[in-house]
Length: 395
Image (cartoon, rainbow, N blue to C red; front, side, top):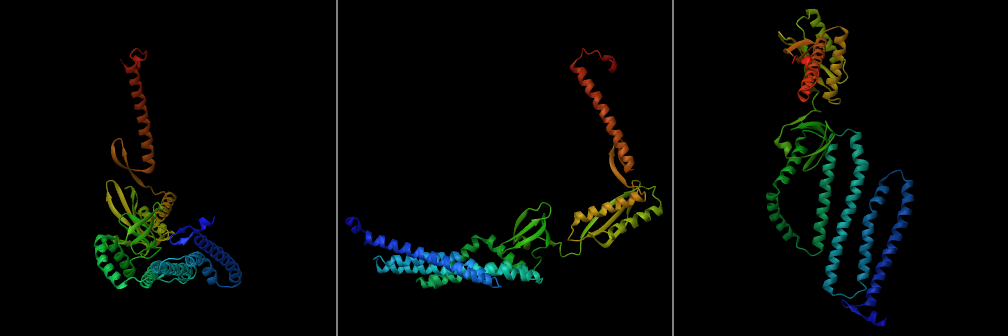
């Protein structure tokens, strides 16, 4: 046993190594116990206060404090061992670097939690027009905190910051050239911040993407598509290159459709049809009152009535079209105003009332079924030429 304890490893005996590990374990256990008791005691005091600031600080500081305890235990344990002065100096620089970054992590965690708890709800509640900038501001502040912490840690660790920054400047040019798309996306994000073509919550249209803006980042903007609820990430440079339509900023979305009426319609019936269309738009929940209803064309095919209206952005174009169409059809049925449909019938393209179209379609389908039955019988005869039903086909 004495021989084992006297065995030297990296200029220290096994006994000194065991003692150092014991000190490390003792400080670690003592620190965790102290942290547990502190959280319990301070937690009871925090529960009695009306503010949540102390609760947030207590909850967000737990993990960084665990790392602090581990670093302190490692520092005290290494003091029990004999190493060269150069090793201790390098190790202390490393610990200082780690402690500085850990402090930055603690600050970032507390800042994010306070912003989520107080700043975001306050801005939304008071209708601040800059609420959409808060996520971007949080990211920028996080980058600044980490950058300052890293520079401070490297400076105190003995590194030449001036030379390092010079090297980063030269290397940054090369990186910017290699990552020009990323740089363009960042400038696109800055352009969105300055110009403000849209904000979070707006419904926009760009290329084939129609949806609501969920998040605006420095390099990417996320849109929830209206048609299928999928989340799409769009590079910010796209908004500088493409035309963006802010649907939410408009008073309404333009919608139009055509009604085909028969030529047999009287003048009074045509006037009633126009009034019914106007009334359906004015009384609609999903439509603005502004509208245009008038005759677009008269030909041998009938009278074409064009209906133009504007859908409210909060309801959308589909609901507005459906609601308006239902009201118009119900009103036309009540006043017995026929609507033509264009259908491909046996004798070509025709204009006919809906009732006529249904009857002709049913007759056409009946004739088609009879032809199919006859064709099947012919096929059966060809497969069985000895059948007794030859007289039915005139053979």
